[in-house]
Image (cartoon, rainbow, N blue to C red; front, top):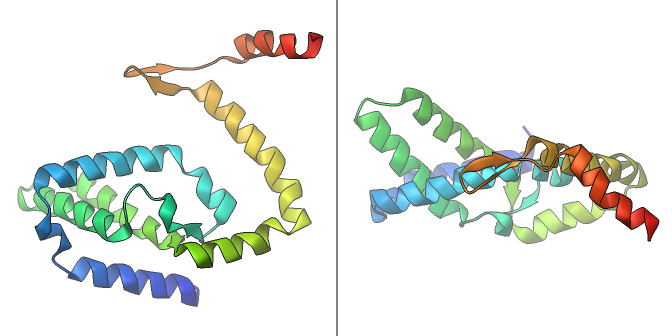
Length: 163
């Protein structure tokens, strides 16, 4: 593990050692963890773009709030002897927070990366492909999975070509 990732892991350990989780209600923690799960579901591509230096202001809540909420819910599940898989899943998402750096550090790393022509040659087509894949996999709309299929998309996009 690189020095900067090791430093961030130690920072997360310090946050976990505080009583931040005791300062929030179980209901608050549940809602924060729910938002966190949705955030993770739709932002996995950020690691592909930023690597291990994602600006932490992209997070839906500051790191200490997320750590507190995750620990509160994981502790609740553990204490009640239920959902061992959920506890392990929650704890694994804490590790993902290591990829989030302070904004200045993350932006400085992004400038270096984005300036690399080889990176751009690989990443730009990959971004477009990712969007197409997501459209075909679909999104949850009104609590149902809805996808904008290739055939329908091509039909609509044909009007762009003909104008």
